[in-house]
Image (tube, rainbow, N blue to C red; front, side):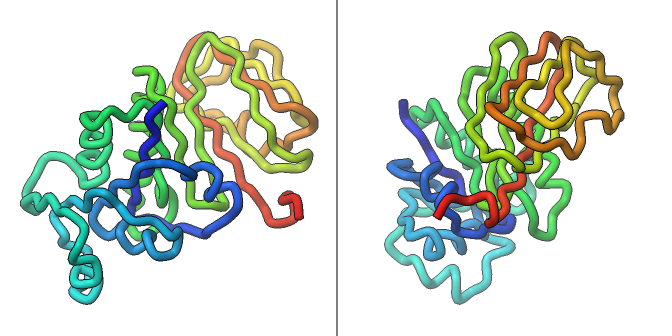
Length: 216
């Protein structure tokens, strides 16, 4: 498996969980996402984007990293271009670092929907800020997750959901129907081995990892 970490412009808190996700990954920075490289101790193999949101001092801080510069007037975000580049370089697994937070809520929504699309295409994709982790829930298989008891999670529906089953939770669900726009699957709590399966629809698991839930 070839794993790539894509550094995006959202918020990042360095955590043991984040370090584990990116361990051994090849790295591509998208525009201002280069700012996370020092925080995470990473050296990207490529830095791409239109560089419109990169301060001058930051642009000058990494002279040795190859760059691909795109015009500001383009029909794809820097993050999407970085993902496409990683796939062209053989990525079979992606970690979108800095996918949450930051000033651009439209970009956050794109990252969520893009992760679902990638998951449906068979590309294992994780979104993370360190304290929040998102994972697409593809239809068919049972998805198992090893999170400590008490961890807060939500299943975010991007369509109506059919046959959603959630085990190992304070409020389990058994093959339920979830209308589009329903908050039924928001703010649940892990209580055992979390297992989620879905027969039809598009959804994403969003987990909040609090410091109290981390092992020393």
